[in-house]
Image (tube, rainbow, N blue to C red; front, side, top):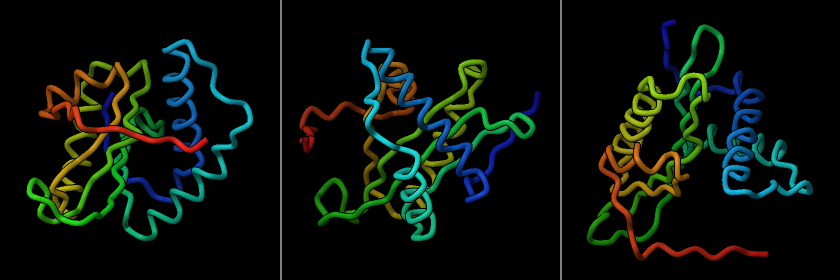
Length: 157
């Protein structure tokens, strides 16, 4: 088996959407929740990927075993007023880190993380944010991510 890596293009969107929904379902069920049945993520995800890939505000690296996608990553770019620890005001929002369960513990997630962190650095980001699943926390901590006790979120609805 030889794992190869390349950036997401529109050619892989249908498969990436399927994998993203699988990932989210796995995260829900791992904490004893059932995903909501009334949410159509397929069309929302297609819209997101097409718009943000075209605008250059989202980048994703994929891991392949032959033609099969076995790992995914994503980095969204945002901007807010600069502050002391992020003088550019540019932020990376890490998401969609997922490795096929049959390919875990092989360094794929670390390789994908390296690639999207480099993309954020090249974009000029001063900070990267992530909301990590329990499975991913160890990877991010070993990479150097730190917990930020000030992070809060507000959900509509």
